[in-house]
Image 1 (cartoon, helix red, strand yellow):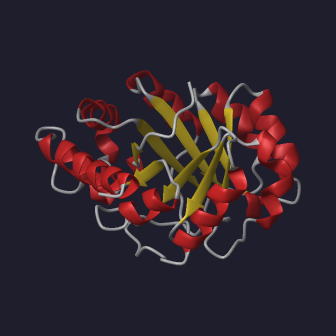
Image 2: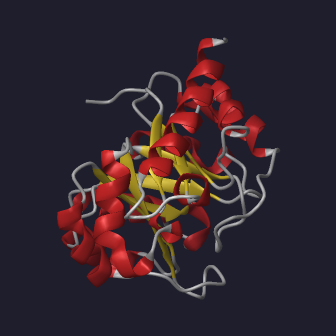
Length: 231
């Protein structure tokens, strides 16, 4: 069921790569709502990360939502593989190819929720005629490619405008990049409901000492919910 409650989606890009399964179980036990999987190809973005086999391997460890963010180009040829690997949501970039409408069709046709990501320099005008095909819009508040980057404040106004454009459509607004207890309230107040956080969640903890994961998740959530309620 769709809802706009604040959801924290830890990015496993910041987890211990040798212990993905245990890390995922740990952050879920500590309050994570979704698990965010960053896929990078070394072409669309200047980094290489994970592919469908890894997604399939971690799927049994995820009891919440597997939120797969494809920072790759071309993207259409890989949609089925990521769907078969167990993705619940597949997000492609508007900038990744010339036929975004076809990409969204392919994602939904593969049985997944369709997400569309926007780089910091991309406006929202080009998505107006695709809103009824979109389940999630991911606003990049850093330039995609690496974790731990500094939050780009101009994206707050983008989210505010995007929220007005969406209206009452059941579309999540996700923020990816630089989310902390200091920046999350800005995006929550502007209309975002899914907050991706990597280093801000995994900082200070480990599989053997996961309590800091919970503390970090609760701090981000509390700050975002307070901003939304106006307190």
